Image: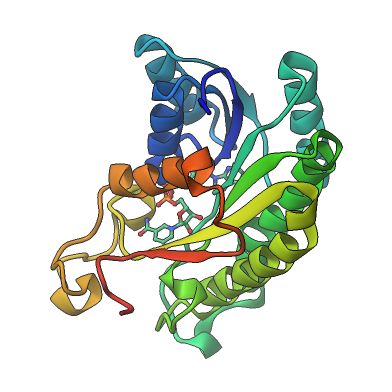
Length: 244
Ligand code: NAD
């Protein structure tokens, strides 16, 4: 089974892991829908996809807003008629702080984008995939979704929430022909982490370095393919052995 001409929607595709995933899936012949809040970065990703001979569209959307989700899913349906792969990836990171130093506003913002955004993505895309009776979803969790993440407690709570959404939805929708898995990267060099010191060997684990976004995209591409046809409800660490 080929991935050629299948339709992939990738949120947070203007940067880092989402951008690399867009390149990788376009390389496999998929039509990619680049979704991001940042217009410039999203258009840039799409331009790179097209430069490499790929096909796709960019849609500006805030994943934490239900109305934006409704609009972009209906735009994709009008343009391509289906969604074969959904990479539920957009998220933000706050300034590290002890739990009691997290403000209520910070809590609300992280939960709105990282957890409610992931929920809304699942909700709207599953409506489409349910009618198709097929589809693959990859949620971006984190080692913070299965492990403590000192100074990022709310981020960790949101990512643990994504693990819960993944496991439960995989059980609910597996019988309908839809596979849902989550990835848990460790440290990855992207715009999200550029302000953090990633040279700390303890945080990097046994391989002694953070990942490049391409190393995460390779796993997402595998999960999206029929090669992973028996993977459902899996929480896949890609952390160089950090949590082993
Ligand atoms: P990044 O900051 O490089 O890219 C995130 C993209 O999401 C940006 O283009 C940003 O504009 C977009 N975005 C932010 N808020 C949005 C919103 N409300 N609506 C739509 N788009 C929005 O981040 P990244 O490192 O590539 O992270 C991608 C995913 O991987 C995230 O879910 C992140 O939590 C997860 N992750 C990252 C790391 C890491 O070390 N970088 C580790 C584990 C998990």
